[in-house]
Structures are given as structure tokens and as C-alpha cells.
View 1 (cartoon, each protein chain N blue to C red):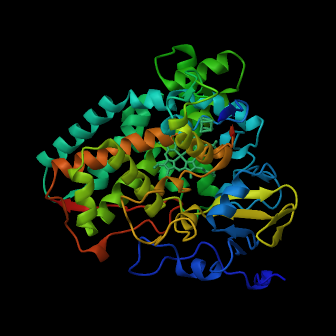
View 2 (tube, rainbow over the protein chains, first blue to last red):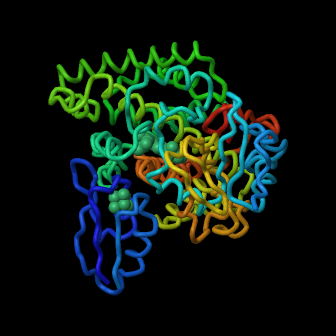
Length: 64
Length: 408
Ligand code: HEM
Ligand code: SF4
């Protein structure tokens, strides 16, 4: 699994961090998403998929 | 072929909920959108915007850049006459701008509301909650839970975060409450907006001159830096202040009313010490209670095809979030409150798309703390009136209870 995020689209809702904190973080100053790892471990795959589904800005993309 | 009613027959919105069913959406809206996710309604100014109730259709539209919140576009389906009249006076903000302008405003507001910053507030929120419950328990019975806990908790939190003196809360609560009724005249809207705006402008100017360690000072610093005007900064502060207390307050009052009717569900929340169970329960309450029931307002900038219909450029769109939370295609047995529901988090209670709630993580933590603490510390909590005496906020854009007399 390969993950990318579009920081320009992110609205800092924090949904991804709440779902997969080992993969996503938020910038301190404005909460914009920070990707911690582009290729998360297999056991995190479901959480990452869920994070992409709940991201309101559709800013998280996944390639299998 | 379209089976949507001709425009002339579009029923009036808002619609009343059924007597005796204070927790369910209006039956007439359900009938209207029984077999399709959108229909036409007639609003106060005689226009006939679309109302969208389906979960999938809402997410599609809320994520579509052709769907705008620009309230100055002709044909915008304003909530009431007051909103329409004040349109020229309301500065641009997250509430009425589209990307990329929206992104610029939003980034200035989101810093204090990241998951990490909000998690760090847990001890503060816990302490405020405990103090308020101590005070309620020490006072006379019955007590009004709204006044004792539901309103002061979020108000204290957002006041502290922003750096708004709590002594002023009577003033802004009263004016804010007047501004969000279903029916507000042009004159009243101008008066309340003027009063609130004037207050915030003064406060921003003060914070710009003497910054403190709070969110409004950070916003005021952006005025000093020339990034935004004082009017825009005041609008941000006002938006956070109003959105940040009334909504959470409604969630606390209404959830308590609902949970007292379902003791087995209340017990689940009271007896668990698993934070995941608590978090899941809060999501289900957000879904089930759907306090934002007035319909979010949008306008189509281009023709949009959706669910076999065409929304024409310039037509109004009303996104009725509560109905989507009761969409059986997403939530099996949608009218049942089930605090263990697996996919509750897919609710639209905070909206969707780029305008999804800025304060959602704060709201979640407030609710997680307050529900657990209240039912644990006051296990004998009970209504002090009959259920049919509870005054529900039928006439407000955000649903809730006006008062909730309780005893223990
Ligand atoms: C349970 C409590 C809450 C609920 C149910 C709620 C609900 C919502 C909804 C549905 C929207 C989207 C409106 C739209 O798309 O038209 C929204 C936006 C917003 N909320 Fe909340 N909210 C809550 C608490 C809060 C809190 C605590 C704050 C602030 C601290 C807040 C600040 C905002 C702001 C600033 C926006 C506008 C965002 C934008 O347009 O980009 N809300 N909220
Ligand atoms: S869920 Fe989406 S919008 Fe929210 S912080 Fe993560 S990437 Fe940004």
C-alpha cells in the first residue's frame, strides 16, 4: 500500500489522525495533515483505508 | 423521467417533527424523499430550492466544488429574512467562502483545534465538568441541567480557548440565541449581528494591542501582520464563539433526555472504562440526535446531475444533515439508538467536504468527558418532569432542549 496526501486540500479536521495516528499527524500551527509514512505496515492498512474514507476533504489517496 | 413534484406543489420547509417523536426527522420530509435522495421545497422567500436527504448524495454534493456557500449569489436559499438582509454586512469567512479563499481563512482558525491540542485539554475539561456537577449537587433539586452543565461547560471552554472574558457570556449567549431562530426579521438580525460584531471588533483590537496566550490573540496577530482585516478577524472569533457553545450544549441536553429514556444504553456508557466504547457511543449520539436539522445552505454554480435529477446553475440546495444520519442504506435500523453501532462514525453530523466542522475534535472530547462523568457521578439522575413537558427547540436551526429539569 502506498499513501499520498494533498496538503492543499486538507481542512485540518483531524479525522485521519484519530483513525491512524501511526500514519498521519497534523502540523502544529494550522492542523494540516503530515504523512508519517508513505508505506504503512500491512496491519495498519484497514485503518488507513478508513481514514481515507472519512477524510472530508478527500485529501488522502491510496494505491494498492 | 422525473417524479419530482412540480415546483408549484413543493411543500414548505422547515417542516414540523411528529408530536410524540421528538427524536425523529419530520415525517413529511421522509415521505417526500422516501424513494429518492432529493426533492424540491418552498422556503420563506417563496423560492423552491432542492432539499437533499440521502447520505451518499449529500457527501457527493458537499465534496463538489460546483456547490458553493457564497451567500451573495442571487438565488441563495437563506435561512431566514434576517440572514438575507445582513448579507452585505457579513464579511467573508469560512462560512460563506469557497476554496481557495476558504482555505486561507480556515488555516488561520484550525491551529487550536488539532487532535493533539484538544487531547491536551482533557484535564481542564474534566475539572470544569466536575466543578459544575459539584455545584449542581450542592444546589436545590430539581435543577435545570441546561443551565447547570450543558451550557456553561462548552461556553467556559470556548471562552477560555479564545480568551473571551466569561463574564460577558450572558451578553453573547442571548444575542447568539436570537440570531439562530428559524424566523428572524431583518431588523432583529441587524441588531444582534451589530451588537455581537461590535463586541468582537473591540476585543480583537484589544488583543492586537495586548496579546495574551489565547486563540483570539493568534488571530489578532494575523491582523497586525496584514493577512486579514479587523472585520474578518472579528467574524472568525464570532463564528468560533457561536458555533463552539450552542452546538455542544444542545448535544449534552438532548443526549441526556434521550439516554434517560433508554436506561440500558445509559448503563453501557456509565459502566464502561474503555475509551473506545465511549468514543463510539459519542459518535452514535451525534448520529442519532442530529442536532443540526435546519438544513445547510448551498447554491449550484453550474448544472449538476445527481440521482437522475439536474440541479440547475443558480438553484439553491439545502443539505438536511440529520436525515442522512437516518439513511437506512448506510445505517441498518436507523431510528434505533445503538451505542455499539459499528459504523456510527460515518454520520454527517459535522457535515462533509471542506466545511466540515472545525471544532469537531473539541466537541468529541467534551462529550466523551461530560456523558461519562455525569452518569457515573449521578447514577440516580432522573427527569423531574414528564417527558411531554420537555420543551424541545423545534424553532431553532440547532435542535436541543430549552431546559431539562432533573433530580437525583
Ligand atoms: C457537537 C457539536 C457540534 C456540531 C454538531 C457541529 C456541527 C457543525 C456542522 C454540521 C458544520 C458544517 C456546516 C456546513 O457545512 O454548512 C460545522 C461547521 C463549523 N463548526 Fe461545528 N459543530 C459542533 C461544535 C463546534 C465547536 C465546538 C466549534 C468551535 C470551537 C465549531 C466550529 C465550527 C466552525 C468554525 C465551522 C465552519 C467551518 C467551515 O465552514 O469551514 N463547531 N459544525
Ligand atoms: S482527515 Fe483529511 S482533512 Fe482532516 S486532517 Fe486528515 S487529511 Fe486533513
